[in-house]
Image (tube, rainbow, N blue to C red; front, side, top):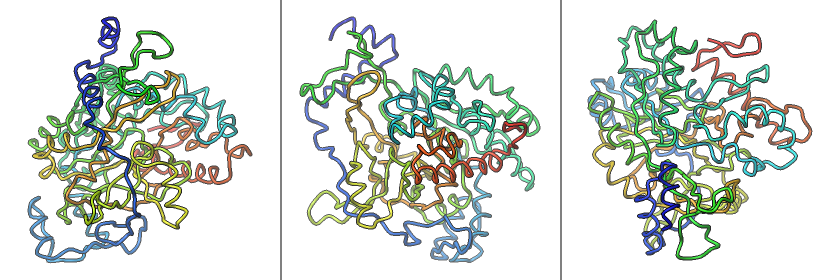
Length: 499
């Protein structure tokens, strides 16, 4: 390899050994067996393996009474001899376990796709043009920054709002304050925060947390609770280089013309799926410190916060993990869906997995499933894991996740990216729960800056926004306001959300 390219990679924080190891494995054909997912259908909501949480009324979860008693005894709780647990029962169990549930986010690298002008045309040029003024306000605050530190919404007065990470920290403190009101002892071990950062942004994030300690959303509440509101247990993900576009054929090589500059590499994370390797020491330490469950979610989802009902159902089920899904909307163009597959071999039973749109399943295949009348359950990028099951198997899971190469055409050029997708872990688990949730409660996501703007109500009433997209935008804006007022404990005053 050109020494100047290696020097460029080192300057950009790229792990050359890991990059070349992946490259050698690809050129040797070791990833040739990683194929797109062939979906044979989508699972139905059955109340056992796929549980609907979308309705406020009528929720119950049934389990053998002896199994319920045994499973809850792990946590020092009793079942009261019940075999059917109503919502109130589940909430009581989940609240008792909330403090022993870690709250984790996947930060990844810089927001390369999020504020990319080409990617933000996904909803059509007319819609993008309608959003252009608001886009011009936020885009400069997003490019080349950790996504978690970028504004999560537009304030009612049109100015940039609080960051995604600041809201996560605030939500944890609000939950701790509620626990204290219930009479619980609360300290730094309550719902501990953990994260995966990258070598490219870890220092910037740490500097932001030092600043956030004095933020009005954090400092007064943390002081009253006696909690460090900005303490994060951290695993740092190494960066790898982009590779040559598949149109250039084999052997694949390191992409060396980023932004048209010869000898310039492009640093990228190897996908959030590397979290099981990167976070292994962190998760082990959390379990040793008393955490029994761990939530893991994308930093860009404003609907993501621990749910006591989900914690209770997973504890009762005896399964190793659970994942949130909602009915797919027109805005859900990047992410994964819950599918059934044929198992891969003749005679092998069907399996459930999460197939990422693009890397694992084409958008055309998704449309085909929908045209057949199926309701597609879209991955909300929220997972809940039983740490007693997960921690001893972290190395095995890290090795077992598929590595997928996808071609990209972005501002930096045409290249391919190697990724492991976190939520494909569902396909290698012995079983898991799927929660069918209300999108407007649990999945207020922002894969693209245009989504953040639509969720904030930008361009409301503009005829250039398609009717279906406009209706989704209206619902998401209402959902955003409920979250800011609810789990974040904020109030809209004088055109801004305030503590």
